Length: 96
Image (cartoon, rainbow, N blue to C red):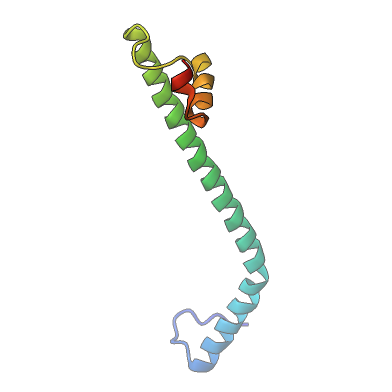
């Protein structure tokens, strides 16, 4: 096979090159799709972890503010359970 680097490609040769490229590429499409699915899953996991870390950092900042204010305005984690119970019982304020 001779290499025709410096000559214009005629339509017959162009079709030959295109068919050869297709034969080389199509068997690999499923591998590319699998790798893309893995990349998307990794990116989604990374995004969720970043959101979680940002939420945790903001929570730590709120807790530091709470401590510097002497505990004013924010209940401790141990006190959160009664808030959930009270929210589900509309008459909780009447009994206290």
